[in-house]
Length: 104
Image 1 (tube, rainbow, N blue to C red):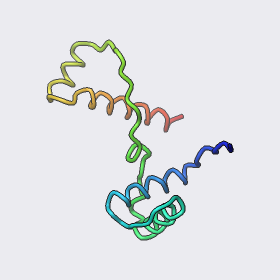
Image 2 (cartoon, rainbow, N blue to C red):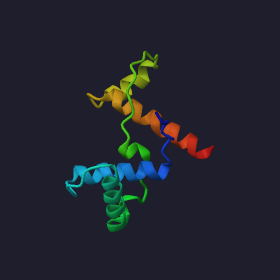
Image 3 (cartoon, rainbow, N blue to C red):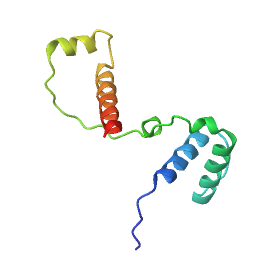
Image 4 (tube, rainbow, N blue to C red):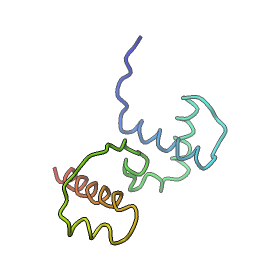
């Protein structure tokens, strides 16, 4: 068996656009090559899709359960808006991570 090489960032964007196109029902093509062609044509038709696209817009990372110790006042601040406070904590941490990665 042949090992697959890691996909380039351009290939990842094309795959993400192909998934986005399929979600909107853009075509009935099937197969790997047809998906890439579909992604390229949708990219050509709507260039605004690629402007400002972040990988996190399409990528849903695996969630890993962890135990973390947070100051009580910080936790209360996230919980005051109700349910999904863990999601808001994750988004805040992701923003910090992306900002620091951008600065590096």
